[in-house]
Image (cartoon, rainbow over all chains, first blue to last red; front, side, top):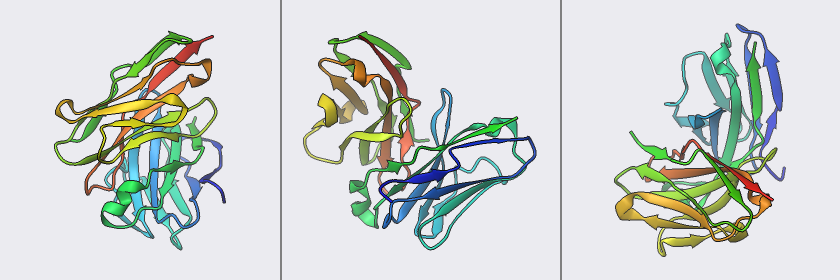
Length: 119
Length: 113
């Protein structure tokens, strides 16, 4: 596609339920990022993928959060046993970064996000 | 820990006023610097970026930013704002070798017609 696609655009779920958020990056982009945007908190880094591997999972808030990427393309972010504090906009971004300094010339391209509301 | 500070959380200006949004980061090594903009109802878009060379970089829509290494700053400027510049602006830092883009908390700009 022309841009980064995220689905669903909105998700309302009950506390304790599991949710799965999907991201389709720009074709050919090897790097994929998940961020969380909360009111007044800016963008909080969650996880980074290079291809199918995740060299940096340091931002995942708890073990209820997990993410995977298959085929070097689509990624899913799963939140188990959702809590009200998980309510936020979850953003996916991709870039055509490679290794070394080439990654510096590849800004992030963002999707429209998934607005998650946990009731 | 690496961090980015945007000191202005909300800014209200009249059209034609000049704009300067502050951005400071904490990292002693090589960085790449970015400003992103999020217009109402739209996704985050790149406004401008600095990698190396001339510390004064120009972006889209008349925006520019100046990298001052000694001050760890990358302030965004525009000489004359328009109503259509109403948006949220995010400063971001990419520290060398970390893969991680670190974002500030954003500045909401409202331009009054």
